[in-house]
Length: 453
Image 1 (cartoon, rainbow, N blue to C red):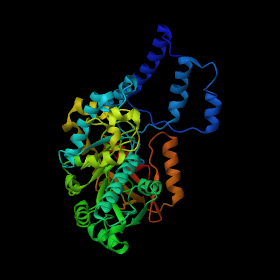
Image 2: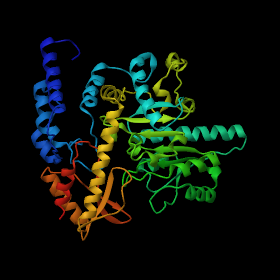
Image 3: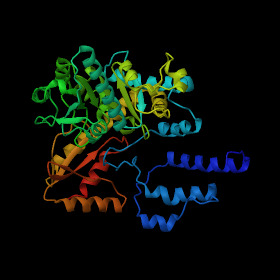
Image 4: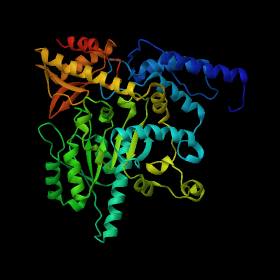
């Protein structure tokens, strides 16, 4: 299997690269759609056999059966959840990352890759106006980013309590119901408790409500506050400035989850919504969401990276040559030891296009989002639920029940026309557009809204 067979190896590699090239240059992109287990079993059959299928048959199975059974998240009318619309350069460079066998966990083994990733992290840190000393690591996604940051927050709070001689072991996190589901899930992993903070009329976490919650439960029982810069369901940006002020008052770690919306920092038209993020102790943004990188990529950044290194560095005799060095080792800053250099596709695309192109692309999606909101307001059978902060637009079809939304979703997908799924808010079924793909046009928006008339 690992011996070199010139003809067979060239054939196998060529087939994979030919498919990758064709997919990367495809225009238009097919939406495709899931198939049933029975269908795939009947058509694909057993794909893992004792003798192997050979590269030709295996690639045929993927290209003609398995790949079409997967939705294309980069399709311009894929507007559900949070889409992924990587630049062609970023997606192509992901092939290079896989082919290069680069270990991205230590400077010793991947200095060039780590250097490049850190350049991309520096750009994001500067957007958030974090200090020059800030730094971090690219992790698989927002869930791992949130967990890693909260582990550091708790570790730091307990160390400081011990040094102060209070004996306190804080176990609570303050967040709103609008915070991402991963916050509650990761709190369970940590055996921590999430205390809900009421939101204001704009669905935001505010300093005033945060202070009331802290006083109600006892500020000494908290080790972190999680604010959100762009909630998944509505795209809400919390009142970061007032929240940061309260966190400084009580000496609490402020973590800002910008997995989806953090990319908006690059857009002058909405940058003011993020005022206060410069006070964050940790911050995440997923480039695979709105910064045009492929799955899976989350930038996790700390104001004081040394606190993360203390909390996360794994100790073992065989690791001493790495952990005792003064170089930047990405695995010291998050959960996990093994890591691919997942930040390189973002770096390559930024290096190719420049940051001005990213600003332009993000602003273009915001323009389409505002157009969508205006169109919803113009049509008498639709009603906006909230004016969008960023690029998530939530609305209702007047007179529809949950079954109507689901039937509409199913029909659009069956026709491979669009992918727009329902959501719920305070017991009501609604629908939403998440517009992060620069290829999504105003014409796409109108075409989808027309189907609801």
